[in-house]
Image (cartoon, rainbow, N blue to C red; front, side):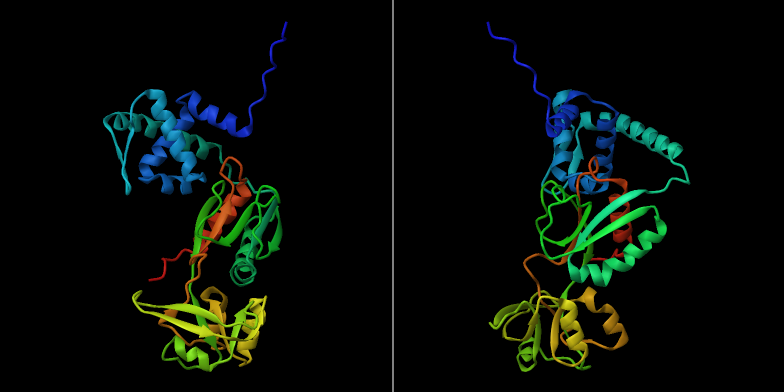
Amino acid sequence: MNSPKEAQPLSATQLQRHRETSDLDANALELFARVVAAGSFSRAARQLGLTRAAVSRRVAAMEQLVGQTLLARTTRSLGLTEAGRALAARAQLVHEAANAARMALRKEGDALQGRLRITSMRAFGHSVLVPLLAEFGRLHPGVAMELLFTERRVDLVREGVDVAFRITRKPPEDCVAQPVLHYRIGAYGSVPSQLAGPQDLQQWPLLMLEGGAQSWPLLWHGRSGLSRETVELHPHISADNLEALLELARLGQGVVLAPDFCVQKDVAAGRLHNLLPDWHLPIAEGDCVQALTLPVHTAGANARALVRLVAQRLASPAPT
């Protein structure tokens, strides 16, 4: 006679999905209220610190539970059905009550504690992030920070990283991506003059990241968005460190191709000049630095606080 098979414990993912579909509880109602207020799954996901897929899945689970469609979805927006409007009114009451409870429990003396492991590309880390980390350290002296500046793609889970600042068009699906800084790559030199167009770069010694000895066809975009110009450029000096190339450009050794966030202080001080102010060089990875964290139920308060501070300090519209 076969013995009964012992029940296997649920994985973390299975347990989370079971919770999402097992009951229309206060958490589900508050999430629904946040989605309605945000007007889109993506915006609500950013506000909640979740992935878009997770928010969409939870709303679908609610609809399955009540047996009615709550949101009318289009490619551009969300609208409430009749059943959705009825539920939204009650969900809003739950959301307001939860907010009031959180405010009542929050004490002024509460302080962040523990460790925070952060990774970033070197250029962004040295030029932009370090001063913000200093501010974060002053605001939260109880948080010990570990910094890893590298161009390597870091796995947040495997390497125990709390926040990663990266340039990417396709962040990992299991991460929450928060855009923090839009940028453009330009041509900067120590001579205070402007070039007629990207083709004029061929007359200057070029300082390029990891250029090697070969030439590179680079497609430049005009500020209007309509102009395009491809230039075959051969690096005079190449390096794997942008700061070294920037120093060479300050010393008059050529023109460096660099993101604008790396040269702001030099441009303001007159050490470097944008030689092609009406042109920029797009790259495949995109034109935005994003803060990557794990979903809110995994990411700690330290990570959320840092991303919030960085996003607030660097808040600016996308370049036109």
